[in-house]
Amino acid sequence: MRRRDFIALLAGAATGWAQLARGQAKALPRVCLLTFDPQTMVATRFSGFFEGLRDLGYIDGRTIAIDVLSVDGQAERYPALATECLRRKADVIVVTTTPGAQAAKNVTTATPIVLIGLGDPVGTGLVDSLARPSGNVTGLSQMAPELAAKRLALLREMAPQISRVLVLTYLADPIAPPQIRQLEAAAKGMGIQLLVQNIRTAEDLPAAFDAGTKGKAQGLVTTGESIFVVNRQRVVELAARHKLPAVYPLRLVADAGGLMSYDSVRPDLHRRAATYVDKILKGAKPAALPIEQPTKFELVINLKTAKAMGLTVPPQMLARADEVIE
Image (tube, rainbow, N blue to C red; front, top):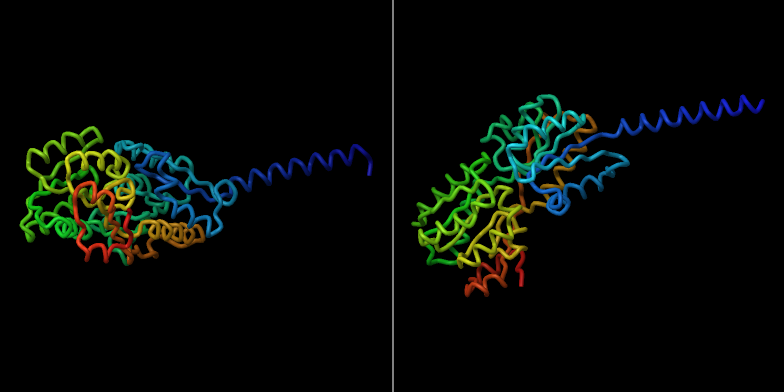
């Protein structure tokens, strides 16, 4: 072979390899994770999801492309970021909040949407039913309303004298009102008066606790929206300052110093969400994938916080706790 022919052959091969490389890059499936949480919290809070993807062979940048888009606590940004997911040609949109899911559903009826563990997808209109979601939405539910009543019962068990409870809620999220209704029904049966404070931004928290003090609140419950997880350190500090025994929806808050938490085992839910992404990328239709509900729940008690508040945790509660933080 003549030298110039050989050089031309190499040049042609190099061009072909470059085109192949570009084609492979374009062929990577793309997932857009749409979340309320700051970017700095995502890897920790949703570690189960990313671990689940890795266990299934999805490595970011090699076998899959993962875009994390955060509204950074500003829910009004959801529509714009949902549109951005489509602009980036996401094959699947994964959502961590109900407002995020609603925004995604409003901008697309074609791109599959996977719920990573939301409150009430039927009651908030995301799907027709858990068994047959229909449309392009499927994933995991966390059963938030039912758990709200259980948490109030746990608070009463921890501090039997409680008759007035401060409730922090974020009514901008559609999962909040059903939880408030459940709390009100449970409170009525227990003879407890609720002092409900709607939190719009983190700056509302001090005033809400002050209102609780004026209303002679003796305990604290929060509903299960992400704003209370993102601002968990501030909530815990204010609860300690106002000497309010509290129960929270996520163990991350108990880990941060909250008195106790009762919730589904979130890492399990998040890991299961990864299997939905896998099935969809392999051709499954969201409408054919029933929405799963949690089967495992955990009670976490922070004994260090209880001692600091002068509380004696009932022995039966300690015996039932899945984890005690000392």
